[in-house]
Each structure stands twice: as structure tokens, then as C-alpha cells.
Image (cartoon, rainbow, N blue to C red; front, side, top):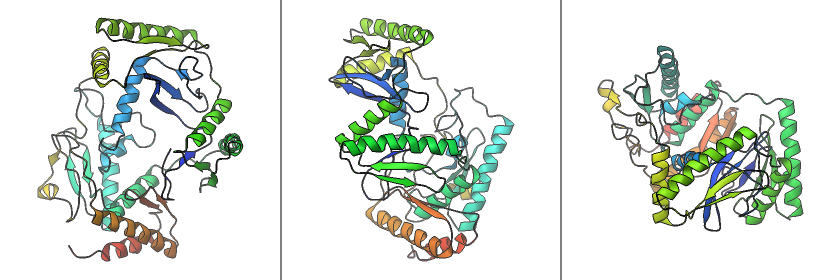
Length: 395
């Protein structure tokens, strides 16, 4: 799901290609379900006879960690080029190297990543975007800029979109998306739910609807249940699932944590506990931490070292950037009302300017985190950005 530009939250369905791991509650119990796309299972969970593909509790720890990582307090708004190291389908963690304290980048990895960042710096220079440079303890070049500056963020997003473009979908993929959306639309129609069908420049068709409407979510869940009916686990999956849940059950027994083991008619099994009890959940967390310890490793962008006096300079006046250093990402800073107003106005100015200059562009996100992705290969975009920057009041 992602917010649209209409000013309210809408759910977006792209041809069934939805994959999300979430912890959900059945009454007062918690368990992990996986909603899948083409080769995965997707359906609606119930308490006792679930039709979901339910996986073992070990995966639950990963899902909860992922949810925390992408939460609003997990460093949102921090703008730095190290995230580019996970661009183009990388399997690395979003926040950088995750191979433990013995991680050492290869010369090739370091050279490729720094070449990307140098190219980004050159684009920033061409568009007049202010930034600072530093190098982390591994030798990765880091750029930082004002996270509340829509111009800077738009130039950055456009740079990466150009450097690592999304593969062009095949006609078969587009047809599959449309066929899936036909089913979703039918379920929404039958439920009397309003929606819109839109197609982007690449040909992907999406269905937008108000995902805060429980009736709409129920209809979409039913559509996915029809499109991707649940499948039984393989013998290997059943054995691994049982072994994992046996291990967790034994740990819960030792910690005197109440739980129940459940399974569905397909053979998927899981463990439930009262995750709405904070004290109990704290004990569960301790069990998970002991059973599945996170390998010690570098904090994201840890030990940033200065590269000359320019590196130590603060961002431009009025910036609300998050500083990096031995403390890691630091605290997320909400934009001020003045910054929100400026960002909103400048986003519209970019869209209007690009349209008049004949520069392909698209506005993503909602205030105050919108970004304008544009064709940076079109040199007509340079004076547009310069004009928006020049219109800013003097600091």
C-alpha cells in the first residue's frame, strides 16, 4: 500500500504482486501470516481454521524487526546516499552492511558504490543542491542533505531512478496485472466499494481504493483468496516448521509463557500467545532474542569520519537534517510548519515548471514528504530547479 496524491490514504493494488509479512491478532493471540503474490499464498486469516499460509515463529522475529525498521520512528526522513548500496535488487539490509563485525567490503564493491555516490554528488552540483561529504569506517562515501528540502530530495530520487531504472515490464506481466485487477474490481463492485483504475507510464495498471474502509479491505482480501488460493506445505516445509515451533514451545515452557499450538486443514502450524499483554510480550521478546540472536555488526553508517573542513560543515541554514556519527542515525526530526509550507509550494512549483519546460515528471507521496521524480537527462530541467531555488527567501 502507498499513499496517493489525492490527500487521503488509499490502498494500491498492482496486479497481485503484493508481498507483506505482518503480525496479526486473532482475538488476543498473535501469529505470523504471509500474504503472497504469484507463487505465494494469500488469503484471510481466522482464529481456528485459517486459510492463510502461516509460517513458523522464527520468521515472526524478522517480520517484527522489519516493521520496526520502516516505522515512522525508524529513521524516516534521513537522506543519505548509502541507501543506494541496496539499489537495483540488492539483498543487503537497507541500512548498510550486515555481515557482522568482520565485514570488509571488497575493493570492487567499494569502488562501485563510491562511483555511484560521486555521480550523485556531480548531479547535486549541477542542480545547485547543498550537501556534505563524509566517509564511513569502511571507506564508503556518504552524502548528506537537508531531508526537508523537496528540491534536494527530488534531485536525489531522480538521479537514482535514472541510474537504476525499473525494468520494463513484459506484455505478459502487464496482461497478468490487468487480469488480476479485473478480479479485484469485480469483488469491489459486488461490495459496492468505489475505486479507480489507473495506468502509469510503464503500462502497469493499479487499483486505488480507500484501504481504511474495512469493507473495502474485506473485498480485496476475498479477491486475493480467489486469485491465489492457499497451498499445503511441502514435507520439507512441514518438518522445518515443526522443528522450529518445537524449539520455540520448549523455550516458552522454560520461561513459563502461556501459548497454544494451532494448525489448519492444509498442515500449516503456528504458535499463538497473548501479544496484547505488554509484560508477556517483553518476556516473549527475551525468548526470541536468546533463540535468534542478531549477529553483532556495525551500526548503520557508524563511525563517519570527516574528509576535510567542508565535511564538518552543517547543512544549509534552515535545514533539519539528522546528523550521523558514532551514535548511528540519531533522532528523527519532524519538519516545522514553515518547512512543510515551503516544501508543498516548491513541489508544486517544480511540477508546474517541468510541465512548461516539457520535462517528464511525476509527483510521489503526500505532504510533507512528497518528491518530484523528473527526467534528469533533459537539460531543460536545470533552469527549472535553479528558478525554484532562486525564489527562496534569503536566510
